[in-house]
Image (tube, rainbow, N blue to C red; front, side, top):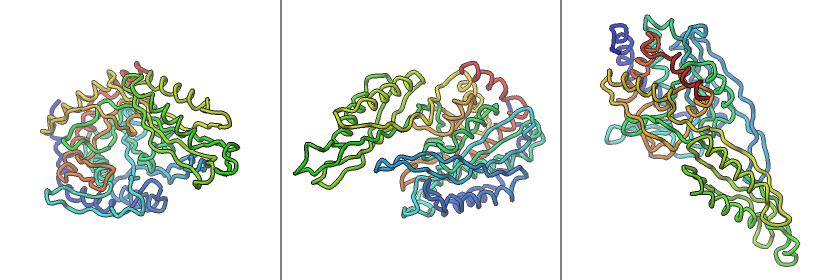
Amino acid sequence: MQILDDDRVALAHVEARGDAIIDRAVAWCAINSGSRNLDGLNTQLDVLEAEVRHSLSCDIERVPLVETIEVGDNGVLTEQPYPPALKLTMRPQAPTQVVLTGHYDTVYPASSPFQTVRVRDDGALHGPGIADMKGGISVILAALEAFENHPARHAVGWTVLLSPDEEIGSLGSGPVLAELGRRGHLGLTYEPAMPDGALAGTRKGSANWRIIVHGRSAHAGRAFHEGRNAIAGAAIIAAALHALNGRHEGVTLNVARITGGAPLNVVPDVAVIHFNARVPDQAAAAWVSEQVAQLAAHPPFEGLTTDLHGGFTRPPKPADASQQALMEVVAKAGALLGQDIVFKPSGGVCEGNNLHAAGLPNIDTLGVRGGDIHSEAEFAWPESFVERAQLSTLILAKVASGEIDAHALKRLRLETL
């Protein structure tokens, strides 16, 4: 594999637009698009669509997402709506199809004081979503803008999906990701790289559950024995859930909180246990799912009822043969650009888990280099915008030339399903 003259032209396109690639991400960060801020998400969607119409000649579609059921802190079930996902398509009949994904939601609610980007004394950009992943979206567009100037582009079709719900589990966009994963040959996802530039290799799977515990309300003084304490029942179940840790290799279960309750003189009649599990493989996922189902099916004392909601939204992403082969060729592409690409395991999860489960080999940390994500210290290194956009541009060019054989990678992945 080597950099050809046509590749250099595309790479130079990225270099020439370095400031613009950063500036648009910085501007996007001033739009609060927390996962529950529907107005902000819709504003961000409009801005992204306008940018795409200006910079790329592709088909643009707003994909409606199905509402999902959410368990409230009080145990009440409500429908959760989502803004549309933004789907961009170019050359859908090309022999090789690449799927690029990102998300335009962030973890910062509209009430957060963290709303704009500043430059730190060390030169890093510090702001909400600058790494995770408005910077990543700018990298996606920059790579595609450059690739569309490459003579070999006609060999590759591409689809981009920008979703509004990744930070809350991709419950609405999950079916769309699965469909794209089934149809594509190679996936590129733009979560931030690690602060040292490393990319995620293997990823654990993740499940989110809620157990609603219903009891019976009663006056705590006059009729205590007529009540059935939902909080006490929830605490017993939570302790049993915590006790699952250490019983299966690689499985961790985190009881995040118990909500509900009543005044001190009232026996509480409802509580909700919110918890998450991480697993290394499908066997571990099946084991913990069965354990949770058994605990939820047997209330700890008479008079309580329980109702289990949730499950695995991010299946495990192990280093199978397709992933190993893809990591090797991406590292080679990086070396051509002077980038030392290494892969490290991650306990975090992302859309790459979903794409892999649908049969799509993918690299899922092709976004900017940054760190402290999901906190008000989030940052990104400005030089990494061009660096990572050039890496993706070169990957696309080598897929188009056949030096990265996306069809062979897909076959390897399907052999393990």
